[in-house]
Image 1 (tube, rainbow, N blue to C red):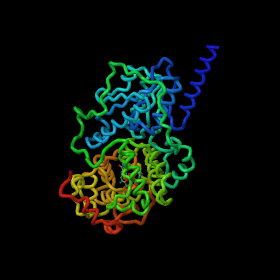
Image 2: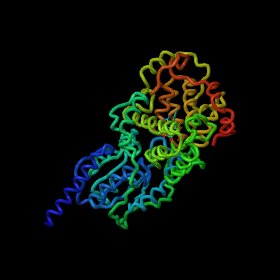
Image 3: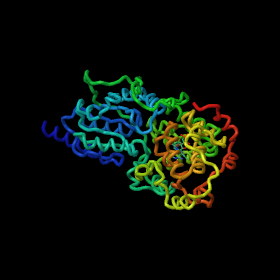
Image 4: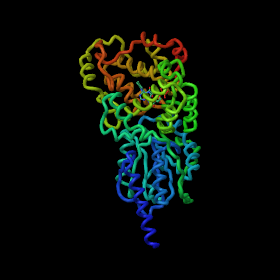
Length: 473
Ligand SMILES: Cc1cc2nc3c(=O)[nH]c(=O)nc-3n(C[C@H](O)[C@H](O)[C@H](O)COP(=O)(O)OP(=O)(O)OC[C@H]3O[C@@H](n4cnc5c(N)ncnc54)[C@H](O)[C@@H]3O)c2cc1C
């Protein structure tokens, strides 16, 4: 009877584990059975930097509870993340205390390390997990880290698509336009737009005394050789707590009217959640549910969800399925043809990368946008479109324009180095997800934005006053 009960329990546990690994959000990167001798389940936190509403953490907890083992979250930032500088690291750092606090409430131990003591493999050698669960990030470099970990770990590795609403692999291939992905996302949205239960781990972990872990308040960048030329921005504070505060404020005070006000850069009427979504301080599911359930006009809710779901997940789709997502090659064939046809057009105004970076153009509206980005770490969406299109107009070639736009965007925007940035720049410069427009010099059939008509659509004088300052920083 004893034997039957224990084998029955093991069979049940294996069933639960198999069910979890078949969840469309989960990708099994190293297969096999969880090690029965393992002492815990490790959640390898990278992209989803939060202790609540985190599907990757939820999978780790469910697996650990089924295996009757504790969960340990391992987070170890490194100084060599491509194009990250002090501004980005400070924001990331500010989020760590919130992660620690939320994990403690769920009975989960947090091990924080930082370069050069960042190795997941070494950590796993110390704590002997039964299973490692990570999160997903479609970008080239972090994807390569996950592949390496899968090769080197001795236990199964699963990753969970925690920062999208609909698991990105379900789309199967690159999507052509917003209207195509919208249909596919909407068809399955209700299966995935579900609040996390934020369950707790059943088994506590006793951290071995010798196991190193940093204080969550520590400045992780101390001693690192990183780019310190871009200062942190005091008007933004990283972390899940601040993200939730902004979300509440948006739903209460700005969602009503979002549809008509969102394209007015001089008015603060968007959520400003993009840096928090980028660092995983808030889940897109939390954001979408808060808006869906809000007491606000349907048109405003739909306008917001179109950006936060359709356009955001279209950008993730681009990065996941297009290896050239951050250069001009990701453009549409019609766009390449039309830009090539106009390659030799006379370009009456040309600026160098340095002039653009220093906001030294003849166009005050453009300079104000550049200064908003450099000085505050964020630029309004409407100005981002104008900003990128003018870089195309003022550069020697479309390839050079694309490169400069990516470089400046990644350097100064807190939400830079993100699929949304690559998709937005590709949309503006190389027709991605857009259609051919009327033919004109330099742009060919790429959609054009003129300074005059752009400036007439909102109070551009006010925007210039708000952002144009004597100096950068
Ligand atoms: C040239 C260019 C560069 C861009 N670079 C970035 C970038 O580096 N990082 C970034 O997150 N976004 C980028 N965007 C998209 C967009 O401008 C920002 O997401 C938005 O301005 C962020 O402000 P918000 O959070 O207040 O947006 P809200 O209007 O409140 O929208 C809510 C969320 O929806 C998503 N979203 C909104 N607009 C878009 C869009 N056009 N495409 C994809 N997702 C969207 C964002 O996650 C945003 O936080 C870029 C757009 C363009 C045209």
